Image 1: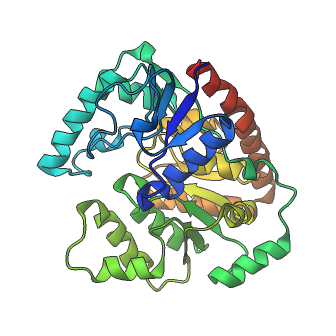
Image 2: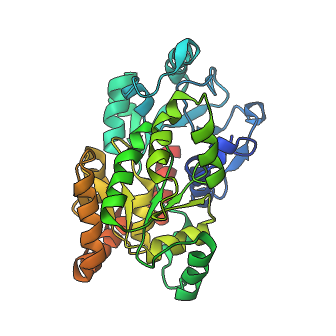
Length: 350
């Protein structure tokens, strides 16, 4: 195999280094320990394989020519292009989207993270079906053990983040429209069970900034609507960006993980939670049925009462929760264990 170089744009980019972009770089480093990380594409020798694990349709293309003998793109989803009414990009953004589509010709293969993503990528970007390879993403190696988590660790986090009850749910993710945070907020209020929100945007300072600003980016409008519901309510615990060690503990002791999204490329928090034998309440959409099978509780994304009911069922029915936790763990081991991911990506790179 040629020497593999991975383009790493997380070093000097806070947005990329947050859980999504930072997580995939961590997973790639663990799966490909011999690969070399580069932040400057001119450092890549031509007689090599270059993996680019980022594609942002409304930003300038990362690659618009041939840098290496073999060039592979990791493309998670095309949600902003699928739902343009909710991801308005302006003239410059649409011009960049056109440039990014043209730049796809410089990649020999594309890796994506679910069959659903592959279908939408082929449909929207017109990439040949056989050129797109599906590899389910792995969890980080820190999540591969559950026996190291202690009750005393959880008590520390309860005190640190002011979690009002030992019965709580967890949400890990971003704040874009597709995350459906407004309906999730309504469901949390109906369930009367606290939810710990993990992510760079979920700090009290950031919340105040969004609520008091006279002008915010249109993509943040759903987040502001969410904050109007959540602000001042002790059921909504904003932890912000937490370490992997803390996240593992939060998953482990949660009643469930919650994902109410309208659309996703995969759903990282499902497999991270499942690795800690914690079940998930998920919106009933195609991609979540693909990754979870029957090992989750599903609810209509536009029906907060259904989401709340599923959360309450898991909080009150210990037998159901235990059964779903074990089935979720089995699904994670089949789909997203780091060993399987490493083997699959090595095949593609060869």
